Figure 1 (cartoon, rainbow, N blue to C red):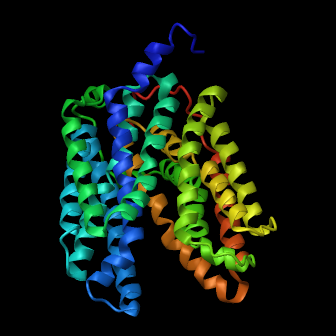
Figure 2 (cartoon, rainbow, N blue to C red):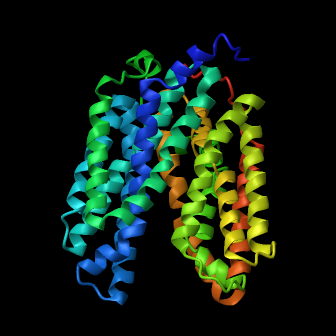
Length: 411
């Protein structure tokens, strides 16, 4: 229990430089990933592509970015376990910054795809390394607060991306993103390495990613960490991204823009991530806090699909609720970091962060496949039912890690 006399000290610890740097890293991460979704069409139009080409080439560029995230998730994670968490924070943001600045000058779709791959490769290390670092440096009873700060500040990057694009052109928006990365790089000079990482004995094998799959119990732990997060990118990748389709299927006559449904979702996520961290501290349980957030997400999905929404205002309110309820992104990654030993922690946390994002590459095609015969609502409900079933099953068998000591290694 935190008393009034310990609150100033607690606040200083939670708002220490590593936590702030990790939070700003996530800010840049979200800013860039959402920025590409916003400027994809206007940027490709400026390169002289037709409407049909914009759709085809835009999907290809997006896939290259996702490939960078998937590959980088494992690469930076292994690097973090072998060379240290601090080195990932430097290398990933430098790679991202250079790629983003160059994106502001690009005039060729093929070069654009290559640069988005490099940007995705760089961004892949940000969140996982940051969460791993603060999980290892904060006192065990304060990790939930640290996760709240990282997620809350980080997801403001989504809101910043919307307003940056509205006040400037797409090239300037990329330069701003790259410039933010350079500023963040300078801030990281004074960040110290994790003491737990430095304590690992030289003979211990670090960052051997294939060992995740070589032991059945370890693989199950890994899959559970991904499974409990499935509703987050169900909401972001399908329900919010295709908000205009759901509005039409619900019979709304008012115009509903997908960009605005995403904006309201991310506003909710910012508030929800603050809440979920505080909730886990109050309950002294990661599992209970995440379970409550999943239950709230389920209620929001039922409201969206079968709640009889009849106005754009109510629909946007529903997306804000959904965003709030999936606001356990940093919390599930903190839980992931707490599930594994120091010699594999960065590899697992960083790869899980990006693998969960990539689940949209499976759920979205399923939604698109079912939509012609089932309709938007029923297709969305079926994909949602699958994601919630896996999330609840994963969380049910998850180890409680609140207050767990992290000074150990995987055998």
